[in-house]
Length: 455
Ligand SMILES: Cc1cc2nc3c(=O)[nH]c(=O)nc-3n(C[C@H](O)[C@H](O)[C@H](O)COP(=O)(O)OP(=O)(O)OC[C@H]3O[C@@H](n4cnc5c(N)ncnc54)[C@H](O)[C@@H]3O)c2cc1C
Image (cartoon, rainbow, N blue to C red):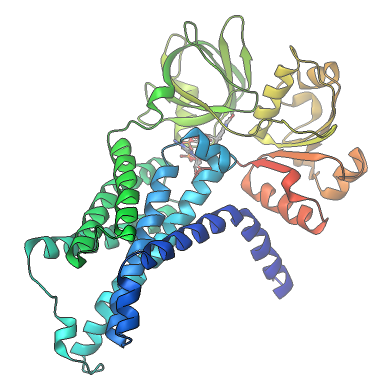
């Protein structure tokens, strides 16, 4: 059973993960306040300090916040390099995107409740108020259709968010249903603009700002609906070699001849194979610049990767989109500690490959946990490549219950001060590591991590 302290501890660490999301949510609320006070809403509230006026302006404010949360989430989903860089990689950007979705659901619930709850209470005889306050001020088509659009948006968002949270739902279902969000956004945008026009506030400073934000969101949702995300970074490649390492790991080699392909070690691309309807992210584990061949080391982790083992063949065309990612090993430390778990070894393979043309001048320790003995590890030549490039490999066999812990890391590589830490592996290990580091007073800004998760 978890002790209260451990619960607090885990919440704290979880929150560390969500710091960026909280920061963006806070900025969004501040922008919402700025827009609110730049419309006549505040003046109206001061002039009529009563419950129904408060309700009216609360509906307006929560509406503004919902639109800002949704627009920011939409913009993040466009995979714009500047935004991903600011958020330290697409995986973290998706985490912010998800939390903005949750924030939108919360503010939308308040928006909806503030609109309807007084009517329910009034009808139940629990709220005594002048009936005129609750009846809509006009019945025009635009007003009614705006409200209907908001209602549809509200229920769709709640359903879609529930789907997002249930990890048992296969990723491709999650992805297809997720696309509906862009359409939902258009409903919400329609309602928001009509509400502004209804109040005659569209030409106030706040009204203009809100319309501008909604305009950006509409562009983002159209880009998404028309499947144009990442369009400029897409190109075609061909499978030239497939190497099966063991029953659940294979290497796929893609030729990107005739392409101006730019990439940094540690980055990944989205690969869309002809037999699959959706692109999947994979790290480039090496790049032969002369022959222009990309290597991907892929583990069978689900439906798609399982099919890959049976269906992919030499000569197949593959659509590549990228490269993306900020897990680039670039810092000013002379000592780096790398921690890889399972197939999380791929960005480290890329960096080792980079050392074949760029001398390693840092002291590097690579902690690698995998199932099996050192002589069975993937890739076969890892030990040799590490020793050629002055990287100390410390392998841990999880089948023998060996584990990488902070004490183990300190014992093998010395103090964690004056070192940066690079982790790639599964989420559970990542969370434990964050927890240990937090309680070892490690400076978290020197921790770089990638959990191969975008959901
Ligand atoms: C940045 C990044 C780099 C990665 N690099 C590698 C690598 O080098 N080698 C490797 O073996 N695996 C890598 N992965 C993981 C790989 O993308 C998934 O294992 C694969 O997509 C699983 O698909 P599936 O249908 O077989 O499994 P599923 O059971 O359907 O999915 C398992 C999990 O994989 C993720 N996932 C599935 N499909 C997608 C998708 N289309 N887009 C985004 N995420 C998806 C989701 O988190 C999902 O919960 C990487 C993932 C990310 C995010």
